[in-house]
Image (tube, rainbow, N blue to C red; front, side, top):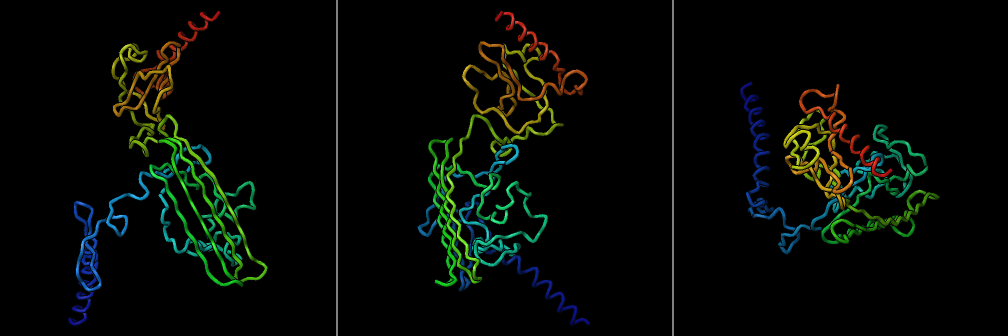
Length: 331
């Protein structure tokens, strides 16, 4: 009995020791370097940011951002850069990274996910769904914005002249300035395959472009600010001489139910209020009776006011008065 207990305690001690040894091999210092154990047991230090065998500390590609676009609302969604795809060795298979698809067998054959809840929503054109690895819906396509041009080539081949299968993919992206990004994707697939009368051939050429406009598309992603909580009340600082300053003073609270924000105002408009982070919360036209707010004063007026902010009813009265005065001038 005592011998058995000793054996169990020894096994537990061994299991606890293994993770400690493993963590020592990849321990990093303040400069981002980590220790690596060689096959002969010696240790040497490597730089985590080292890009190639020459020891250059460059980020490759440099300054790249990747995103998808929500198909329903058009919002930008941050995506992971796939210069080397996760489980790259399995990305060629029609059966999926983990064999989760049923297919007719050959490379490039139609397929369907075995896991029902992972199947995409039924499209209007159902005949493209079995070829979802070729078709590129906008909510899964990666748009790019990059400081230096990027090129990604991959070629997979197997078999012989009778049953050989090949796939060549090429991706290229470049920027014309900070806002305009263009690129193209090429995907060529040909599979004779092991199953007769089921050879496949696909060729896709896709040209894309993106333009980053004059607003923050997503404050959390681009700036790290949360302004999309309906229960939040935050301070706004109004510029002297503005309508908001006249009605509510230099500082007052508003609601916060937006994830987008103005990045650069159009000619003729000037910012008249900011949040503490510097986000434009209100603007006015320099000569016309036009003004607007980033927050929602209609939810803070009259019976909807919860007492945590000013009642913004005077703002709407001013808007109606300005509109009426301008209309009289046009008569």
